[in-house]
Length: 359
Image (cartoon, rainbow, N blue to C red; front, side, top):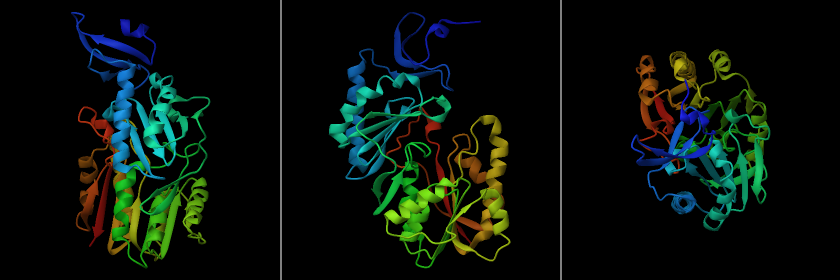
């Protein structure tokens, strides 16, 4: 069987009508994705100028939240900001555009000149997400974007790696976690940062007096990224500060050693990318947390982060019921304010984190 929609090319702008040919909305047809039809506007007078107005409104609002010299923030968070299938992050004077829908490919170049006067930006890079399998995943749209991009947050200078890093080059969605970390770090504290990536949490720990900071990741390039940021902040790297290893295997081995930590951080990559993988993903989540818990000193902290939209907050907490006798929740949260969320797109509210204290 086929339908009229099959004849419309993916990435097309479509007018949606009911059985009586009455206007319902304008949308984006993208049959190759999980969501076949994304609503762009329910205003029949909506056009390209309306889209530019929407972009300027969001730019002024987001800059008011986090804008400033050498700052970084999420400018467009897809559906929730009125741009379905489009993410856009600002790092200092550079803008990284990430279109999940091909509809945006031809439109984004027209956006660059609209945001520069508002945001004070000049360099623009288009970075396709991995699932689009583009032959050239990155291309410059305007100005110059060099890696790494240096930006400031909380008095620390971080690096974004837009060409070689994940997402747009940095995990901006973990802003709230980075914000409270200094409050629980005391001089002489010891920290184990698992799935460390480029090492933002490790840098914060060292900046706030931690005596020992161990970063563990299976990607060897994370060592170089971490060391570059430590030098950026005048904190020379020390020997054995980074360990290249599979975190699950490392935690099993580490339990046999005497070292215990005041803070253990677990920030795994997406553990569940499809609904059919939910059951084994929850078992893996429970295994990860229970393996890390013995490495935390009594009265220390265990920080757990989950970025899978399929694994709800309630599911994650329920899977850790067996650990309740040994831990209590001190803080929990999700996405920061620049990552707009919408009730009509709950999948976009994907990030959950918990700070547990051990008994």
